[in-house]
Image (cartoon, rainbow, N blue to C red):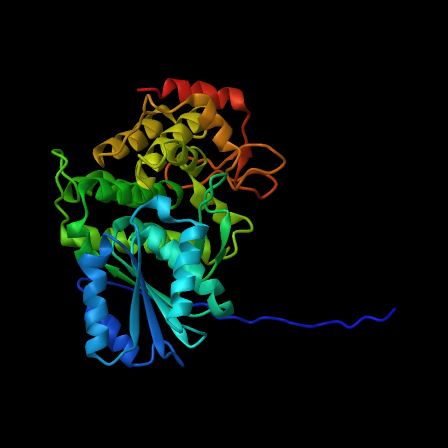
Length: 378
């Protein structure tokens, strides 16, 4: 018997810029003209049926006017489209349009678009470059940094995918003006989560300034300075985590704060709840459990719940959600190991609980979870 060792040591620089501003279409065009991506002859704009008319068509027209070879690929808007089937349909359409390895994908839209397009880019031609043009507050908070791309299945969410970093991200704050109020609130949900896990001062800023984004009447205000600060802070908090654990081998699981219940309830609701709405409920479950474990004071728990309420987000479980089905769905969470449900917990506001073994999640049995879930019924 003989053997041959293959030595392949990688030194990879996956750094990229995030540009935060308003109406960044011309900035994108100028970057492409100045060689943002090299060796590319065809561009695929991937978007959904809602964003297509609002922003994608304009980007396609501008690119064509500037001599770029570009095609548009559109799928039905909504989380239900974030599937392997949709990925397959777009990939086949790209192949039919003669897209090959000299191509680049530009994702224009929210988190569903960036998740799906980034996954396609990671596997098409064994990997082609992609750019994110984020048009929602949720995408700005959740998809701008980290490179996590994935699709959902009937059995689990975001467990089929890969880590794939974009070439550049554009956060167009002007696009937030076209968001329905529910979508705006949904984006604030991830924003509040970031403050809870990594920045107590940012949490206090949100307490003082949330009404400059959405007022007490549930109307969009979108104060420019406040929105820009929120966009920067979301990037900053997430960067601190991702830079230390890009491949989600340990620390990065803290970004799943609130997602154990949140992701499960999103699926069990059949996506009647937006991601941020489901996360809000998941965060309330998390702070209630954390309070019962002594990680959060009564005052801290109330502050988190009150801020989610002020952002126009639900803090109770809708009556159409079956508790047993919800508990069963918790076992599909990506933190589950050995058939045991794990939670990430806050340790006060602005910090995550770390355990003696260097882990950031804790096994919780079904009984205390069921008690909390029953307590959260509408």
